[in-house]
Image 1 (cartoon, rainbow, N blue to C red):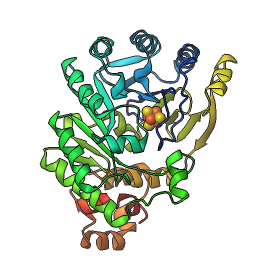
Image 2: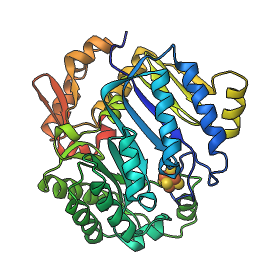
Image 3: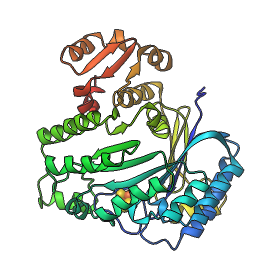
Length: 375
Ligand code: SF4
């Protein structure tokens, strides 16, 4: 029985244009927003008896900042009608810098949204062009300024590194510009080339080389060094917080097997040992809801071994690591005894540390966290 409070994710599947690296599900026309919202409210009702309270809400996508203040308000009203939102709940919205204006931001705050995540990606015009972002550096800077002015005290930035059009120097310039605003949270993602995206296809046809392993490692370590020196805690492979209180409470749920409900097309959910996900198509989603059925595409039941492997993979991506005793209790596997030899070797080589009952990656270990979980 999982007693952790669940989180709620809502996928808003609309973007004005598609970024060249993106493989998230979204449509580039907003004409179906009203139909989507009607269906979303019905989906909330369908889960009304299965989920009771949430202490985090994440409006993601897609680009939730494309919705009007009234539409965002209607989502929060419907949410409160169907579920209990715990009083200090973290309510985050993902936004595009081009959409952020003072009155819009103020209305978001009035609606109870208390955390804003801004998809800045880079403060370099050439890099933004390569990624196919629809905003400019000027808009990114203005988005930061206006978010503070509107009274947001919990601002997160998303940035992307290891871009072919970028060298270490220009990446550090982006980080320098980012910390000028003292955002509470910074996520730094390494660019990946997903097969069916325009950038993925161009890469496969040999149009440009991508940074090799050594350079990728340099990007990672320089990022970590720079942001730690600037006062940020590197608490997960891609995430940095200006103090423990600013770590993402919602993302933590994905990393520690807390339950979460995902609403909207392509959204994923997890509860006990079950994971399910919705149709990756707005049309199919609308048809299912219209027929009075859950828009679920597939459900999988995870064995205790699968859950344990996932917990190992996710836990070793966090600085805190894994509590060996909790792991033993939850997954009936004594990591410390069963993997004694390999753990001793990894500790000797400086990839992990075992201290106070926790198995944690070192700074070097974080850079290769995904391989560490293969022990
Ligand atoms: S704004 Fe986000 S979801 Fe939309 S296309 Fe760009 S990366 Fe994808």
